[in-house]
Length: 516
Image 1 (tube, rainbow, N blue to C red):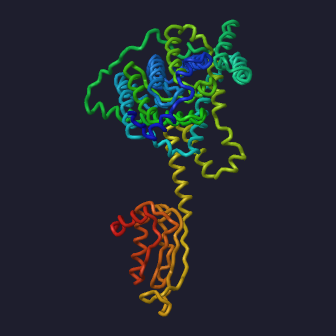
Image 2 (tube, helix red, strand yellow):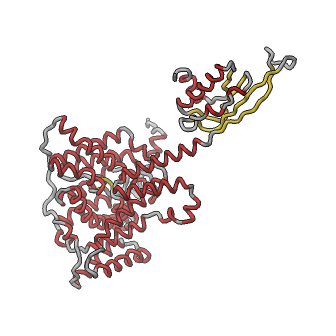
Image 3 (cartoon, helix red, strand yellow):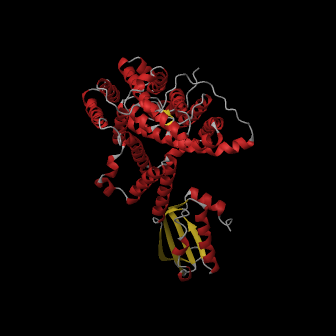
């Protein structure tokens, strides 16, 4: 007898099923070639970035390079978003840089490993579900800000350099723009790197190269166990940095995963991605790496510029990185930085949401949406911290939303007459009734001035408050209704509240009279 699979489990399995799968790619020479070449391009692009982020963190370049290798190969198996690239990042480097400077390498690695533990705990707690509360305007701001930051990071490679950098930059941009129109069999970024490197070597052009960024390691990463006292003082010293790293890394990774979902029109398991990032950071720390998170620039090279879609490209990016720096370090060192800068610049231009800043779009969108997008971009660019920018963007969006919804509540008053007799027949006298119809969503922002909408001293002895077209969401509104009833009762007026829906009635019955 076969045990039936619950509908939600089957649905989740289909929803998160990658397309194409790893098996599809392995059995298709065309797809496999695309994935492997995409991994090679990303592996090359990771080298200068990892070195630069190591410098930011105040550690040896090999720490960033080993971290990039370990993060990429680990997340290929553990992560929930196929084809997304994780490695050492600037955001993480900035957060944990003070640890290496003030407490040494052992505490630095312990901080990375504890951050991985925090990320796994956050994943178990369901933090990935919070991604649904990030508005589209914040997401657009996140993408635009990252494009600006990554583009700005390439500027030093094309400013104050030998003049021959500029013809090489022009050649790279031409190849990146026009080659995809001719063929996509070989990724345009790979052709750009090979062509510019070949030109520089053949014509002996003296331009900055990868080797100028820092010394490449000559050996494989080794197991690294931090030599630190396992005390409460150690924990309190590194925990704030670890938690900050965990939050920044998860936020950047989940936002990048959501962006790739939209580009590829597929779904990914954000909870698996969360604990996968944590496990990858722990493994990175065990081998002396600085940890990291998803990298939007390299992910866009992989997904958008190279067309990769499976975990093979992510794994190959890490594998190629290790081979390139350990075995072919001398060859990689000859690659002109302008080749990699050209690729990153074009990725930024392609990633930036130009539609979001068109005059027609700005005119069509509500001003609040545009303001949230601009605020997110401004804070990210000003601080260089994606987490701060996204949190500020969500906060601004929430405040503007609450402010807008608060004005949608209306109270309409009418005076009617009803039978006053015991049986309600027409033979008896009638009494005046003030009927108030409340419309809208009632919560702390919209119900604060609800008590001012009633004419207490001018109303007759019977008041009906009709809640049919409203919904009560919180204790603030129940307290406001209690205040209204209390004011009327003090004047000897009888109050009836009618038309409550099931949720409102349950909440009102539980809280009314007990809020002081």
